[in-house]
Length: 563
Image (cartoon, rainbow, N blue to C red; front, side, top):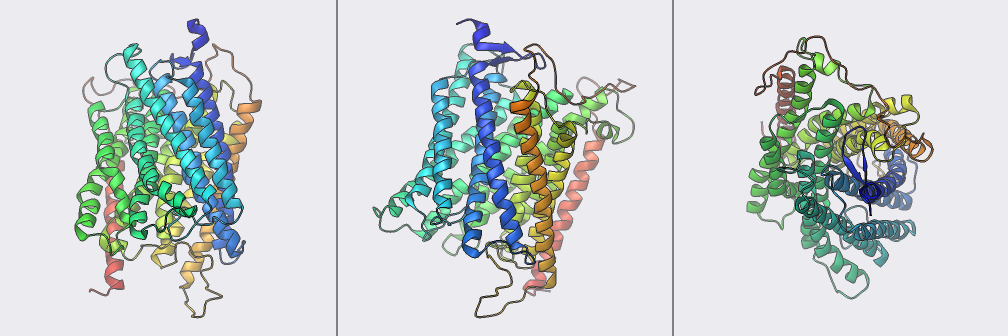
């Protein structure tokens, strides 16, 4: 087969694009968007039910919708998109052919069949066990079987990614070490293997238990092992969306990491420590030893957080260096003001970076502190935190990079450009509101999963403060904004992929304004990058971090009362 039949040359990036990889990236990305639409629809119904003034769904439908939302939005949408990222970061970035394409198609169909089986099981109404599916709650066998098939498919995708790295190395399609984007994807794939194995260890026996072939499942052991799946899957997300940050900055701005070694070290910290952050879900468990809690929430967690802090400085630092080299050197923030904000790929990426750090990151560290965790455990603060990481962080980053994939991989022009430019901002405002108001309500004690915070049918009355009702109402309004932003993303993406103008094979087209050169292209030296704007932004982050930490300790002392 000729090289032109296997590859095409990208007129924008100059990369050789393997056609097998390109097809698989397209199909995995399309499946991801479909399940995002499904999961987002269920999310809106959940938020409108938890808004006391609306209270949309009856209890059985609420728990059904909550289960479907968690599965589709937290697992299916994100993992389908991450498989697309893995294929892009290996075959496309390394100018290589995709190893074993037939096996990659097996991955796609297994994940699709698994996702459909679990969704059918949930919609049948006898598997409303929510995202955690804690035993002794029992779903139908089809629910567990679907997740297992989906996970095996994802594991095959990781295997194809690893095999493609080997092919690229043997066929010498790149020189030196793999690029940082590929290294970040490698980190995500390694954590994914740990995650999927954890899921298999606990879900296969639980599947057999649902069939009546196993007598009992130990509830504490289930929680401990399940969070090796539940939280580690979010660490896969962190590694993947950080890789997307570097990729977007490189394509749009030509930004290069300030130090490849430091950035790679930060990714390694994820592999060694980040999966242990799942411990913060178990801090209130009496059956887990104090030594285990101290290790996982002290040294291990802080070292993992250091990795994110490094990326949080090096990504904007690399952007500032690239912008200042272009001549945007006036003051602290001309480089940021003159960034391509009208390009949704850039706005999505940068908003994801800021919100992940300020909202998801800070709240995660606070939640991972054992003493403070005691006043937030199992309240709605917990989903508030992970909406700050997974929705405002990962989902927004993936939405942003989609506006690059449409012209570069799907070879279509992005439709509805004005809508595309507004979409990341609207979604970011909604996602931030969801996260902040959930955390506010959680701090006031609102339960994490309860259908009705008024406890209207309970034998004993419990009144939350009026502020809690206000928070849940604002959470509902924020969910509407996020749903509008999500719907705009689906409309733009589906419209562009199926009806957008086809780009010629050699047409260089990104569709949105790129950066332009400034007026004084003299900056720094070849070995030193002055990034004073980024230093100020990092200082603001640390001040916010310390203040929020202090406020929560103060709140804890008032609850206990220790002062």
